[in-house]
Image 1: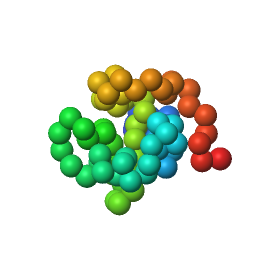
Image 2: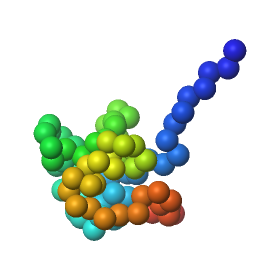
Image 3: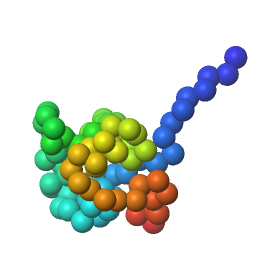
Image 4: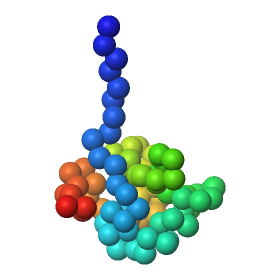
Length: 79
């Protein structure tokens, strides 16, 4: 039997998200260290913070904060 794991096709780093939203990386980090409506939905891999830009939760956060960003087909920000 095979195991199928549905992984998102794109995770952004803090630097990628800061570039996409034209914000400081420190502002992004501040919004991943607490709880409440200002926290940006994220996942952690050890100490690394990543953002699943295809998740409903992330898109809802963008909408709730009036952020207009094209996240359906992001270009490579780290290349």
